[in-house]
Image 1: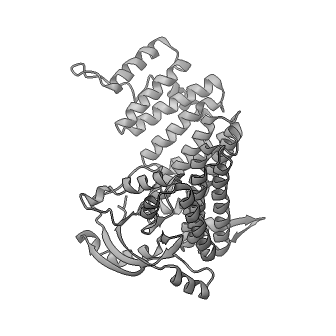
Image 2: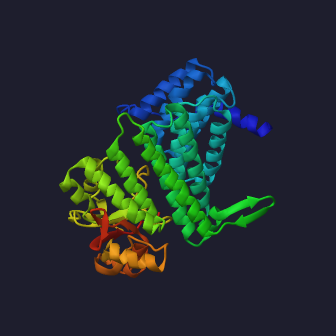
Image 3: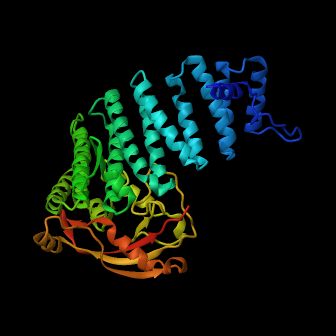
Length: 457
């Protein structure tokens, strides 16, 4: 107790070890220097725990973060938090934004050991000490989920299950808060619903692979014992939860006045994709046909529909597009990639691994870009079966995979990736694609994939 009191006094009383640095009088003041001058002026006139110091401390921390001085920024934010807690109460919701910023700073510094404990504490504050359901609470939960996503790729692999499980838990809570704020039929819910779906898919991918993360995700406490759920059981659970989420999106657009029939048809297409990802072949074939028919009736633009469905597309889609136009625009904008320079990739599929810790999927849209232009790439050609081939597979097994790369060949590769081409081939075959569709029926098709391996942090 005595130690903690001393630490608190040091934090509050220091005009700042971190901030008490001489300014070069011969140079014009930058943003950080101006922030320091302003803070020092306030400290001369206010008590060390005056509430008026909080925002200036936060601004100083922001400038320190921009300069990569994370330890000093941490001390500034810590001091701001302690002042808020003394002024307004130990568990006041006013501290939440500063706690969140402190965690982001810790993460940027690469200190995931500290970040995990801080994330648990902030989640406890959100769930136990938040007084009202507010947009700020919802935004904070979404940010926390994104931090856990970063942890999946940046923290040590031994803690992947922690981040996957807690990221999903936080997303579900953010969705519940959003529904309480906006109602169950508001289209503002859709991005949060789809983010929750993407988290489910990441858990599914991790569970399917042998190793510590899969075991940790499948563990469940029953009384005083720990039991291990089967991968098949988890697969069914993920499939059912994801299907409910996609049907929720479909229901939201159906409930609009008037109903957004194009978005409803797009949701139906995503449901077919989800069926394909979970090897629900018969459901996928039927739903692809129904979604194609609905889109054709609503959009009435044969050229656009032909362009959209004329080649395989990598699954799952990174985000939900409520219209064909938005989906086409996104597929065009995603053709530019830092690793590929001036290469024309308009007729190719580009897959860039998210990270060396989790290379099985592409980067979630909310994650910062962390690519290395020297990682190289390999180019593969392959084919994807059409309806006859899928029918033969389904006669052998109702859980046959569709949209899988077959007849894989290495077309060409850079010098860096050439040695890895043999290792990359199984990864390519683990990817899933929406088949080329004509009148909603999968067609056999050839495709070229540029595979960009992740840079090891």
